[in-house]
Length: 178
Image (cartoon, rainbow, N blue to C red; front, top):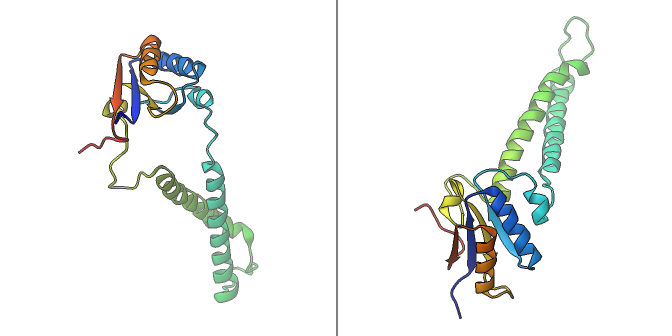
């Protein structure tokens, strides 16, 4: 049995990469992942990737931050230490708006940063996980699980027909920068 875990099709051009995805899908070859040094329009729909739920998380962090700050300001200025300034009401909502807005934005930003790091496993100090280091510079890569039902020679020929400049058999999941 072969020790190959992944077959990598390496492309120079994003259009060739999209053509390679079409050919692989037409031949019912499951694609593990696609690596690109830049965003490619339409690749998410072609690969069947669902929209991100990070927007919902941002909304929840904003609501949490706004609620906490509004509650803190209300408690401090109305119950704990009410100060009569020019005869105004202690519970003057327009006075609470600026600081509540700023804390809403702050909590959203910090919450999204931590959520992004958690979701992508890109914690500070951790080495990035990539199949081939050239994917971070100038190459476009399709990774295919070699343990599928399609023979490896057929996958190699499909990738070469699609315009791959190199087909590489990888025996481990990720390469590190070290």
